[in-house]
Length: 124
Image (cartoon, rainbow, N blue to C red; front, side, top):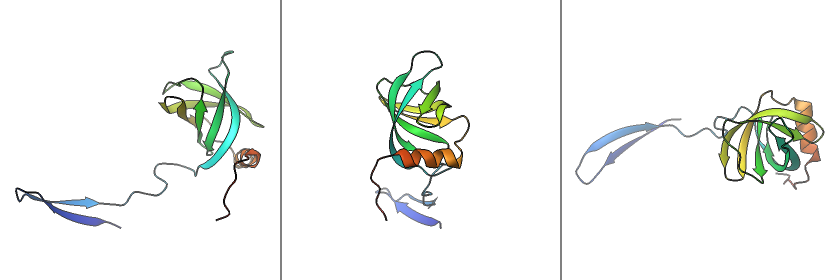
């Protein structure tokens, strides 16, 4: 679906613009699920710290951390049941960061993590 707009400002200059509505899922490769899972984040050494996974997809996660993360850094995210997963911090804003897994989770691992989550979900 495309639309067209014809705009005019106070100087009577007209221009036309073509626009398309944004896709619902944006650039995401797989849907995200809101979760609340305790995990650990480290950079390969003994510097593991607690964090919380607040949403999860098969390709990545959003984390709440207790220290700022740097975009572009490689981390090991230790998830419950699954264990360590290599990931790259894609974006960071204070104590919230988004990471992309080097290897996507398989469906069984993803489903197992969703089953561990205690967040109430609506049935709609």
